[in-house]
Image (cartoon, rainbow, N blue to C red; front, top):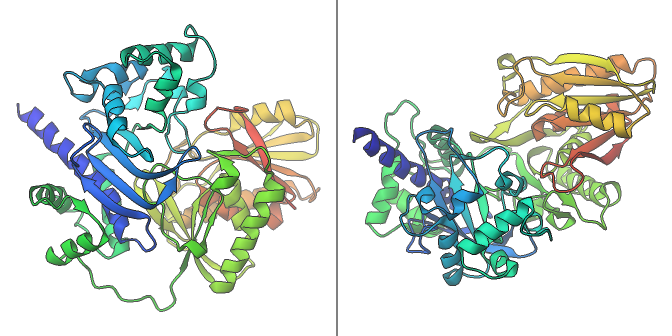
Length: 505
């Protein structure tokens, strides 16, 4: 009994923290989040946290989103797995009568057509389940094109369609498509402690009292419940500020004498609601050039994307020599940004690096280098050509896929150099900005040594690492170039391998 009570308490706290994670965005300047509600009055099951936007925000697909309704499911164990069959089982969401899909179908009937729905859980999708192939790496939206791929009901995706269609008592695929389009499945979401850290960080950013890490309790958990009791659970900017005044949460802030100018480059919008941080005039929005993570068919990286990024950054430098760079963008864009704001540019740069424990500001002098390891470097011959390929394996291993691409597509490459951390790949392998800058310098130094006899040898860059690390590598472009940066098909929906993007000479 005691264990079940604690599980219920933790589940309530988890939902409260998802609420605060979104609510603090109300206090960010130029935020498009205008209202956040804790335990709204419907639609049923997707009423745990509701976020409203004005102006509406871009997600997958051409339509913009005015509201997002979340169903939040926390579990004691993180090892749980689920698949497409669970979406038709009421027990999966702790219900007795209606399944997740039935609740989604009902919610569609009452919510605005511009609304979207998100299922957020600490469980992960089963390996090998068809559902694992249906979730976009761009924003966790269901990949409608892949689900409705034109195959019969006997195919792998056809079985998913038929199971869901029969369960909802629908007769056509178009009817099913209307129900599931825009559904986001946020699996493997952050832990209670990770959310606590992110909320504390956001609180400091917006000038609100953070909670001490040594405290046993977390004030915002109980405050969320009190808001519901007081019928104040729907917050906008004004009501949130008043709440902070009433509760003594506002922190007096002193102005920074020469602040860093926040600028943002966004080629995609991720799953979190915090799609703010820079003024509209200081934001380069490239989402119209991409369909999810894929370049539009009539666009080219070198012709269309590169000039926009370079022009935007050069205008930003004229505004301030101190920039705080937010990169919700492809890896290639991070490298290009570093090449523009290189070591000789005279610009001081901070980087907002997002990860499992929230957003952090990385600087090349933040003292993190002593906390992280150097790369293990392996040089291998893969051919007789004079060109060089490098694989940077940090968040994931990149060497095998890079080797396969080089073998199949790049006969001019003679050497593959693998840079990998001794601890193996991981989402938190890079300790901070100074560590990332040191790793970038190690890559640059090794390449200079390898290229000593042929400075004009082309370098092909394959990377699975934080954007901030690629930014620092880009700052060394003069010692690496000529080089070609590659993008990987993370959604595995198109070419399922690497594709070249920018040529930097």
